[in-house]
Amino acid sequence: MQNIILVTGAGKGIGRAIALAFAQAGRHNPDFDPLLILSSRTPADLESISLECRAEGAVTDTVAADIASMTDVKRLSDNVLKRYGTIDCLVNNAGVGRFKPLAEMTEDDYNHTMDTNLKGTFFLTQALFPAMERKRSGHIFFITSVAAEKAFKHSSLYCMSKFGQKGLVETMRLYARECNVRITEVLPGAVHTPMWGEVSENFQSLMMTPEDIAAPVVQAYLQPSRTTVEQIVLRPTGGDLQDS
Ligand SMILES: NC(=O)c1ccc[n+]([C@@H]2O[C@H](COP(=O)([O-])OP(=O)(O)OC[C@H]3O[C@@H](n4cnc5c(N)ncnc54)[C@H](OP(=O)(O)O)[C@@H]3O)[C@@H](O)[C@H]2O)c1
Picture 1 (spheres, rainbow, N blue to C red):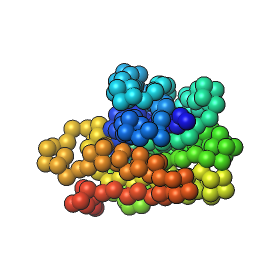
Picture 2 (picture 1 turned 180 degrees about the vertical axis):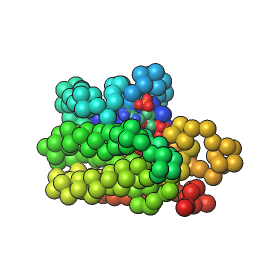
Picture 3 (picture 1 turned 90 degrees about the vertical axis):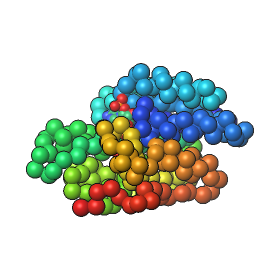
């Protein structure tokens, strides 16, 4: 039976690696047949990750959507539910961050961060959870961050949004346990992705790779449905990059 999996932010970084890891798992596991719905705002990124996943034998679909837009969230969720009638796995990965001192944060930075990380994640989850609730199965991943539990000085708005996502994770657990749906929070430390912009080779050598995050996500999904991996915390072995 096909597993209908939606990955947001699938065009770059961690989401891209998760999509590819699901596709590769399908190739190596005869009992796992992923149908990957890949979403982000940039169609060219979606086309290229879709081709990579298809090369691994996965069936793919792409939906360009901005989860900061309520219209797009509705279009994305309608697209999934009308085309496939259900969903097995939602990977809430799309996220943004602007990193600078507190005094330099603007209203635009606030809206940009909260509209994607909080509003988009909340309303997409709200739209798709009932399909899992009805069939009493499903799995929702939230890619939050170590910044959902720990403050970093240049990350005030990002930390607010990630602590906020954690509030949604914990609330969703209450609903999900009543209907056999699994909730996994993934808290990565520094991962070398486009989110960081240009980084020096030295800095890069201290970071994890997107594949380091993707592998345990797919392993958690492939656990027997009676078992939930509730939290995955992954840090660079040398610890967090900014500690003050
Ligand atoms: N990198 C890290 O060190 C790190 C650590 C902990 C947690 N995380 C979290 O991991 C997640 C992925 O981060 P990343 O590092 O992979 O970031 P990234 O390289 O910047 O990729 C983010 C992805 O999300 C998409 N996206 C951003 N805003 C969106 C929106 N409004 N609507 C739809 N798609 C959107 C981007 O594509 P488009 O721009 O084309 O839409 C892109 O595909 C985020 O939630 C981030 O907070 C990252």
